[in-house]
Image (cartoon, one colour):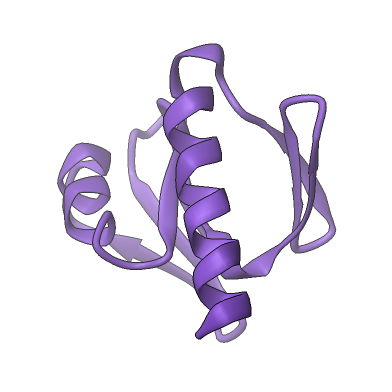
Length: 92
């Protein structure tokens, strides 16, 4: 579902349907790798799977039953990726 950096330990946690996994890398490296796929960084600590977003409004995404805030800094890039992803999945 998402990839995030834990605030206190700064570990990278990957959450999926199979559970949580810890990854030995930086969020910046993962963001770069995942940018070619259906993932987008929504703030300095979280990357989300665009295909699993249930709702996006008022700078908030609903994903895996939780609500996450999209930072002002990432909003424009995130919205572009979301629109591209939705149009690709609708037309393709």
